[in-house]
Image (cartoon, rainbow, N blue to C red; front, side):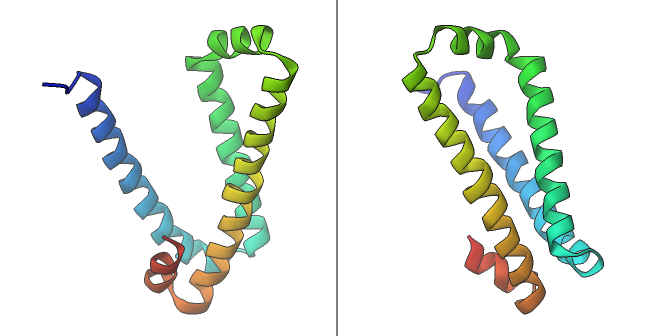
Length: 115
């Protein structure tokens, strides 16, 4: 019927990610009042980077090492550019804007604009 065993797992992980994101948005509003936005987002980015590195080493370290060993310099440059874009533009800049927006107009309205 076209549905494989990975589909329910993927759906469940999407729902779990949505729950975590909702909790993040709600807690961000509260913590945004207590901490300076720059310090708060810097901590968020550092924590996400550390957790991502740990997950990569725990789950995909061998695959990542094999990819880096066999990929062309051009491919590695493209992957590095995408990683830099995701880290700076998507994660850092958007997060700074979200914190400022939540403090200015509230979490609910800011999340509607942010989404």
